[in-house]
Image (cartoon, rainbow, N blue to C red; front, side):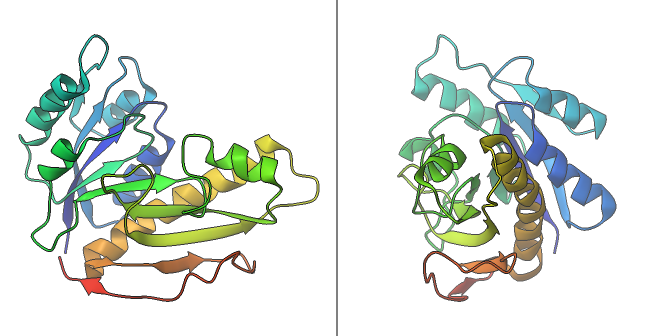
Length: 221
C-alpha cells in the first residue's frame, strides 16, 4: 500500500534525495506530496524541484516557534498525508505541533533519522560524540518522534564498524551511506507492513553494542 509523505528539511537534502531516488526506482511505494524547508536556499528545494515535487519555504527567522509551526502546519494540512518525514530538519517540534499529527493508536505520525544508536548520543553531534567516545560499533536509528528530543519508539537501527584508520570524515561518510539505505527501506516497510517497532535491518557483521531485542509490536496502518 502506497503512503503519502511530506519531507521536512533544513539543508542540502541528501536523505531527501535518497528517498526520492528510491521512489523513482520503484523501491519505495510512496508519494512525496511536499518538501518543506525552513531555510531559504536550502539544497533540498533544488532536489525536490528536479524530481517534480511541490515545495514550500517557511522561514523561521523572526518568528516564535508557535508562529512558525502554525505556518508549517498550514502548509502540511493542504495535503493528504500519512506521515511527516524529517530529513535533516533542524527544528525541535513542540507537543502542540505533534498533536496535529497523532495517530488514533497513540503514536505521532512523524518519523526521524538520527546518526547514532539511540538512546546513545542524542543531539546534533551524534557521529562526532560517538567518534570522540571511541565506540567500536556505531550506527543509525530511525524512530517515531515524541515530545522528547531524539526519543520515541525505535523503528529500525543499522550498525557499522569503526575502522582503525577512520577519521571523523570517513566515519561520518560511512554512516551517511547507511542512512541513505536505511531511511527508504524503513519507509518501504511501513508501506508494506504498517509500523513495526524495532528491526535491526543491517548489521555489517558487527556485534551490537547493546542487546536491543528483536521485532516487537506491529501496528497496522
